Length: 388
Ligand code: NI
Image (cartoon, rainbow, N blue to C red; front, top):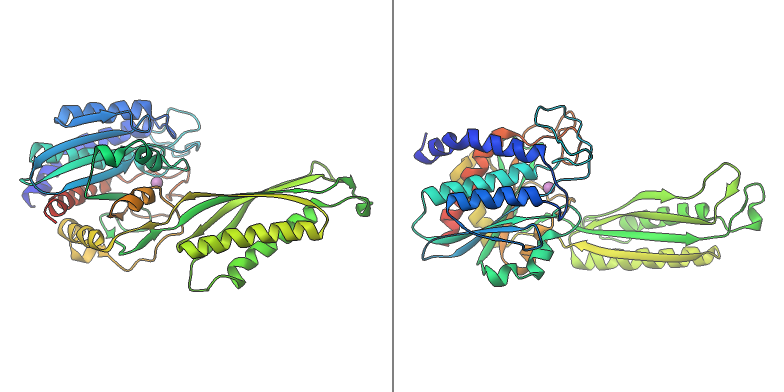
């Protein structure tokens, strides 16, 4: 065992205790007050300069070691509005909230790296540890940037990490380019005219129109987008009607859109809006269509992806590093940081994804065996990026 691996092994019991404590006390977007205080207290104890209050519950710790680059290392800290079903001894004590995406593990690994770097500082580099709230849906990264994250902490590059169920524990996937898709949401309100279900000709049936709309939107992906460009339109909610024999007045459709290329995103939005408008008009119904762009695509910059690859090889071993996995249609608000700074976001294997051990499942749990691997990656990355 190398010196650094044995030093990491010695702090694993602490890492596991922190992770279980965070897991038991999940907090959702912008309400991570206990989590934020937990992180700040630990960083102060390690001897870092600690800055709180960015995006409310965000925490930034700074460690100055010497000349060299200023490197941003980021973890997300929020939980999800899910009822935990794991039955674990450290399961959530907050009903309806759960660390079902492993951000408890991400927070713990970055805290572990901060402690190790503070205890054995490298000769070069300044390290900015960014603990970001509200990754799920609410764009906490964007809010931290709007509130001056990169003005106050001018990092040369920023790096992120997410656990990946289905990839063996300890393996790391690095993408040179796109990693995660852009994430948008939409809503169409179809205003028809209610009537007796036995006399449909007396009304305007929004359910018939809504089903045409859903089919027409699916045909955008299959017929209007270049088949080599990934795109997803998923209608995830249809609300209309209350009983058997009444045609309702109104129908609401909602869902999500994913893509990578900006021109594909523009095309998806424009074609969805046009089809909603024209199909509703053809049936004499009114339509209100709204489309909101939530997160951009997460795109690693090439030089920083190479630094991440070197760090992964150095920590995990060359045979454990994947550079050929396809990107995910999932989304990630680290994308906002990569719009402002070069950087790279990697996946670290969380082990099997069987039996509901997948992200956002009520049966998911972060794999504690990943903790030392994640800390080791951060340490190698800090060393390499500081002199890059
Ligand atoms: Ni996540």
